[in-house]
Length: 217
Image 1 (cartoon, rainbow, N blue to C red):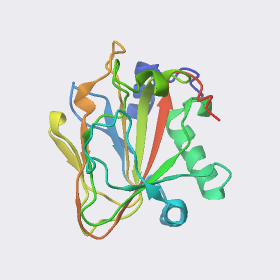
Image 2: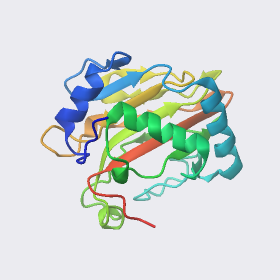
Image 3: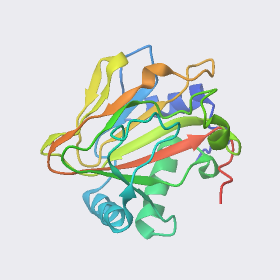
């Protein structure tokens, strides 16, 4: 299996994803954005939901903007030693080819009724108050891989306003995008909104990759 030892190699990773028979590229010149339906099997999704429920805590944000309701979900840092997490990591590596050393630990999120993550980007804003803190070791975030673990009865979609695209939660569906433009600058067109859940509960897994080896303990 080919492994990319540079997670910033946008063209190569994009080409790999675009060539995958089950991956669909969103037709826009503004960002590299893809989806893969049925990426996770139902039993693996259920096992990951159980892990999220076991260790969830209130979510936080970098560069606190003073809005206590900006991100109201709950978060869980998944233990990489868990069999379900190992299986997930293997699936991601097979899909994107990125060397795991560039990846942050997988994170789970749980959204109950009324909870959301207001429009935000996944990259750390250059010059922001917490930029050095979060990028000093592993550098900027490059790619985001996000997976819906369950269906949501109402609400809970992910909206990319600048791209005119909204994705609804489907069990096992993966979204992924490059947080940078082709020239390496951060891409504000990746602004996205984890919209309020109106009925039911939403579970999501997120995997971020960095410019350099993760390196945090």
